[in-house]
Structures are given as structure tokens and as C-alpha cells.
Length: 374
Ligand SMILES: [Zn+2]
Image (cartoon, rainbow, N blue to C red; front, side, top):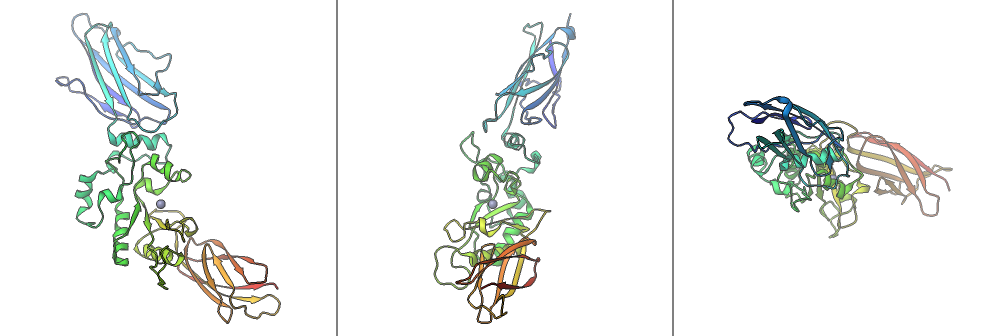
């Protein structure tokens, strides 16, 4: 008789040590691979009974689809230690599975184990396969039930289905699991309270394969870690309320300021969020480090370079936000930006436009004087 006594697959290895008396020999666990292209498999078996010798143990391994055994794999003896290699490029989705069999001399005295990825590890495998910086732990993913337990009472206005924008390409539906951080749920709830109406959520949690489809170049998007939100920007929300039906920069700015007050740490530049179209949205996330965004202000005056006389009616623009100078040539412009150098462009009818670097400061108003040549 021969039994499998130990299995370790992937990283961190999933250990399988069935009790000797287990009636159910077909144990199903789960795993993720070490990397997109490799998966280490270690196994041990014990032979017992008359004439049983460890040297007579033979192994058969059926690797996950797309993976193959090393050509020199040693598949006899009491233990095996193999690295499976993936030959084909990741195709996006099916759960991986492995079948391991042991026999004594290829006879019927056999044992086997089938190890297939459950849905949580199928999802985690996306982080491995798409080489994300961090592969979340199994316990970080929550389903509807866990969401209710953990957050249901504290965030009654936010439902799991609203927050889960994942897509399981293999199954043709959402994943039942998502990553959602408390910090993000807190910020959304505070924001809802601040604006006094229900937020229109476009997208919160995205799995890596979904992120590739939505915005492939941003491979470390915080949406994949449950730390980012895309919200629809209401048109005609900020003054002057003139009945407009698409959101303009002032509508965006009002929501961006509120999001910042509610705890948003980084807000995507307005120029990337489709303002002045029906697709206008606000993206914010609650990242812990890096360059953070804040309300900023620029106050200034636009004058003729030669005479120093004020130029009224000049158009001033900073990263998509615009203002016009008054009769005294003065303007005031508010925005939400990262505190660094940005370009202020000034155009006066009949003159060559001027571009001037301006260093904005977090939660401060900087003053500039722009001289426009004739
Ligand atoms: Zn986003």
C-alpha cells in the first residue's frame, strides 16, 4: 500500500498532510503558482505492507493546463521535488489544477490527490500572472457575507454589489470576491455625507484582468487593491447653475474638493477625466504614500510686458482649469493638483500666448505676475 503524506505547491506553499485515517482520499485544496511561469511541487509518500519499499514508489503528475514537467523529472522514490514550467502565454482565466498519483511498481496499490484552485486563488493567480507588485493574501478578499459581517452595519449606504466591479472572464460573471479597504469605505461615506446625496459609483474594485481591459497602462492601479473609486460627476452641480447637462471643470472641482475633505489622498488629474463630456468622472484613491493631491490656488495679474499696464479679459489656464482677468488684470484660479511645478498658459487676443511655470503649494494660494509681450 502507498499513501501521499505531504504536498507543497506554489508560493507560499500550500501544505497538505492528510491524517492517515482519512476516509476521503480525494482531497481538494488550492494554490497559486510561484511566478507566471513556474510552479514548484514537492510531495512525499509512504509505502507499507509486505515487501513495500520506498524505492518502488512511482509518481505521475498531471500539471496545470499550459504547464509541463521538466524533461529530466525524477518520478520514483519516496519524494519528488519538481518545478513545473509554463510554456504558453497566460490566456486569462481558467482555474489551475494539478493531479498527483502514486503507485507501487505501477500496480493497483495507489493513492492520488487532486488540487484545484478555488475562486479566491483563481483571482489571486491574476496578480501573479500579470506580475503585480503585491499578491494579496487569501484572507484579504471578502465576499458578500463577509462584507455584511465586517462593514454592513457601519456603511449601510454602500452595498457589496455596488463596490465589486470585477469580471471573472472564465465564468462570464463577476468574481464573488473583492478587495475593499476600510479607508476607502470611510472616505466614500464621509463624501456622501458632505455632498448630501447618493454617490453615483462607476467603478471600485477591479481584478487585474479587468484592469488590463479598462486601463492597461496603469498596471498598479489602486482599484485592484480596493483603494480607489471612480465617481460620476453630476452636471450643473457647482455654481453658476445654468442648466448645463454635461459636467464642466467647475462641477468636477466641487466634487474633487469634497472628496479631498472626505479623505481622498490622490485625485486623478482633471485633464484625464473627460470633463465637458457625458463621461466625466472623478477618480480618487486612498494610497498611503507618494505624491498626494490637495486643493491649490493661484492668484495673479496679467500685464503688458513693456508698460506694466494690466490686461483685462486675458484667459488663464492651469491643467484644464480656466479663469479670466478682470478690469485690473487680476485673476484667481482654484484647482486640485499635486504640489509641484505646473504650466500656466495665458492668452490675450491679438498677442502670442505665454506659458509660465508655476509651483503650486498644497492648500495654499501662490501669487504670480505674468508679463505678456505685445
Ligand atoms: Zn479610477
